[in-house]
Image: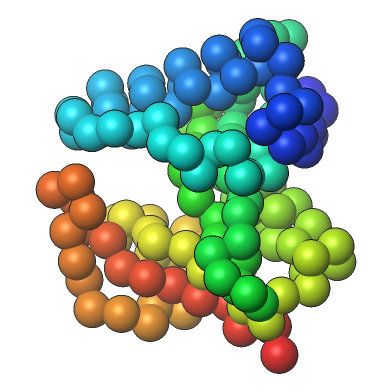
Length: 144
């Protein structure tokens, strides 16, 4: 299994299809949440994923939220219980720190996953809010 980092324009047709397929599987089908999962943020994102054969097994995207703040989103694993989620998050945080050097990293976490992000140093910085009917909180990792 290899870690891949690509901008939108660098993705192959098969990689893009597999990324979108697994995102819809997790965020729309498994979570029973009908919403516009595919958005224009993909165009400006760095897509980070593990691939085994042609299957995406873990994924997240990175993009600039605003000057000095990098946002992580769409964090998922297709194979639960193998530690891939923690592994890809750790890799992404290292990549952001080393290559992008922002003041902070921001994400919007589903409430059940707060502990997952706290393991990597993220802290809750908002009250709970609903996004597409699912409870979320804002979390940040300050790097200054």
